[in-house]
Length: 114
Length: 111
Image (cartoon, rainbow over all chains, first blue to last red; front, side):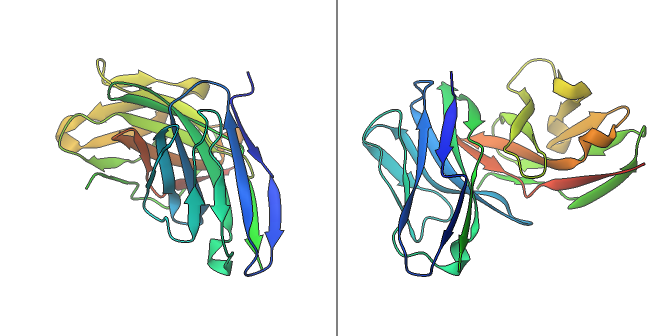
């Protein structure tokens, strides 16, 4: 199994451009999340999904959109990139049974907005 | 709101010395707690997790962690560190099917 696959691994955008970060999982997990990682800030939750067709905002949702049309895919869209969105982005697929959860992470996407 | 606190931003230890990384949580009920490690330029790898039962949890790479409810802590330990342990370590807790992270502790190893 591939687990969680994120593409691309690296991306440079100009301010105002849009793009989509892709995330796919093959573990049939219902729950998926997007995080951004910035120095000294740890990982902060952007958006999450508890199943196909259901998404919700995390701690830092502004400037990002998500959708979940299938269980496997959870793309993150930047509508108009800003330098403040320069970061490393991680997608997680989350196994859950009752209150017990465990996250499986992709390898990350390093995004630079100039 | 539930939070996870890692009081130490940086920790430096000599190779072969023992290690303890601190983690405190704030949550009313029994939390589910994790430690992840991130090597430079890499993704996150799960070291260990605590859900219930024995409060001393063994993980990979010789790490262990102890859950102490009275201190709201879940500190990570290793008896003897290796140069390859230099990395950033994250404590995390689940909340409503979301994983919430501390800000991380960067571990430096002196030869």
